[in-house]
Length: 259
Ligand SMILES: [Zn+2]
Ligand SMILES: [Zn+2]
Image (cartoon, rainbow, N blue to C red; front, side, top):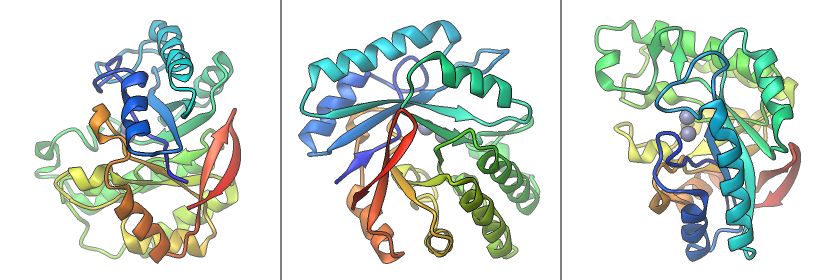
């Protein structure tokens, strides 16, 4: 089965509505999609996250798509940023609608935007930023707030790569993910970015397999045409690393399907 568990709409930094992603998913023979627009922050709005007042519209759009495409399974999810101290808000959000899936993300390290622009990375201590990122990513994984952790090695997006060996950092992160019972995402989004590589890298995914960590699959589509993009590459990578199943979620309950 092929499931795309990561996509955005025009309510945030994407284009189109859930129905537009559903149409492409049906044409490409996907079995299931999950809309995961960027969740609102508790105390401030941005131009790339839902506003709290957008939530009913977003949920309504997903319900409409479900009615319009009965041949496709369409899940209701959110991509929810982890920032220190957000736990109470994320739990409140989880109660607000009957979500199927919460995808946890780190896009900011304090005031530093990880994936906004290559320029942000110039002059940075790259190794230190990577360590900072994985410290926060690991904290997010251990929080128990998320079903899966998005684009695990996102800091590679603009090809600013660490000089030092990150195996120990990855191992520690995987141990926490495993203990929390969360999944991680295999994201084809990186193939469309300067790094030209799936998130996470093959060595990272091999480690995840060693720790028996389940995986979700996502395109991180911001336009409907990218739904299911490069999934044959993601499936090949997953198989190479020893995976033969993916997870899907219904009202935050996990099931496995064969790849
Ligand atoms: Zn993201
Ligand atoms: Zn995303």
